Length: 294
Image (tube, rainbow, N blue to C red; front, side):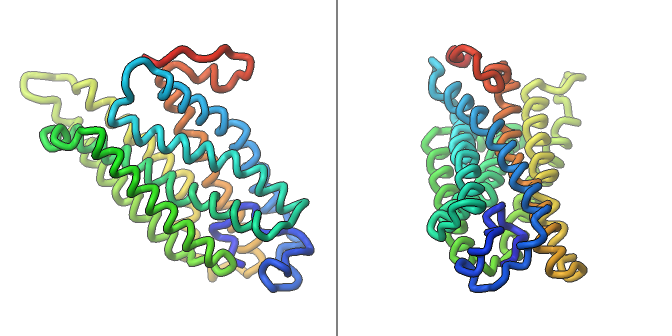
């Protein structure tokens, strides 16, 4: 099985042959990479799950209606919370239960992180780009119904691609995910460059940049960095797969690259909570229930 885009559900046990018809599993005596990946997953789940739940709480409990631009944030938080909750079950199954159906189900949910999270992050960036670079056109499509429709399409794409990857779990088409992530990064680069050019134009009769433009650029640039740091290692390493021995790539390079992906599920909610002043409540279990956001 190619571990390039798998999480800890690479079945490090004697039961691996029951799952992939290969005996013995190549990484059975090389578990350091998967141990590192499991540790990252557990740490991400411990931080990311309460952070995403707090984001949902802040958005759903606020007095005013959720703005159209926050629909993407709401869906992203729901997806990431689901993925974070899935990680401990996946790890427990791998090291103790070795149940085939749980293995397939947890991997399908894990693929949500690979497919859905960057897609929703990209939607947020495109939305910010349209608001700054094409304000007139943006106002025409600012209705909440359009955002809901886009979210529905994003969920459909996520479920479809995740199901496809799960169907080929033991022979993952890594080129598909590499191309998919690369395409999203290209869109992100375009949004950042376009917003940067727009920011350099302060507007007629003004020397300073409009605060809305500044905030939009900060949002897009931050998300771009998240995608670049967490997703690009897996994309960049794929063309060099032939330079590694199968054991090294499957048992060490693949798991370490996959470990970069998981923290993306907690970074975006932490940044959002920081912006709305709720970060302390998300990190402290003893914190009182948050008041509705502004």
